[in-house]
Amino acid sequence: MSQANPIRLFVTHLWEDSDDYLRVFEYLESARNFFYRNTSKPELRPEGDKEAQKEGLRKQIAPVEVVIALSSLYGVSQDMLTFQLLYAQASQKPVVLMKPFGSQAPVPKVLADLADEVVDWDERALVDAIKRQARHEDTTRWDTIEFKMD
Image (cartoon, rainbow, N blue to C red; front, side):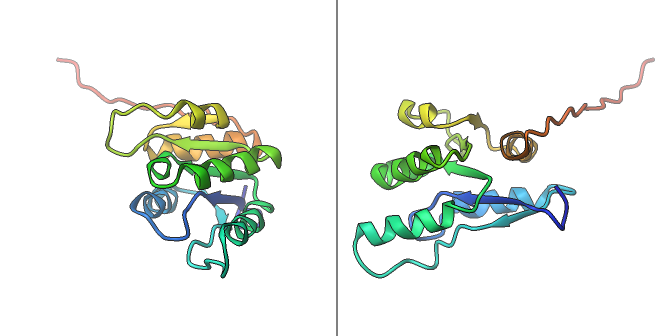
């Protein structure tokens, strides 16, 4: 992964920006040396019925290496979120599922079953999961804890 070869990703949406949708990009932008290209376009809602919307989602998901799924959308539209994950799975695109933000509520089983990896809202966990799922890059990071002994 480099600026010349960014990871192509799609973040699930329901044709509008949500707090969680925007939060994903805040996390990704704050990550050092992480380059990505977003193919999700929630602002470009296609004219027509649900089938036209589904076709628009297929076009956005087709070129990606990884799908980031927002479990918070499940309560808003189960069928559209499930469609996006089923299409990703059928297209052999790995899915990184984000747990509900700021909640201890469990991830719905149907979503967990469609995900390759489930992560907390943590910038490092998200970036590492994307690298693992999209490029099979294993990141071995170590935390350094400094302490003073008297």
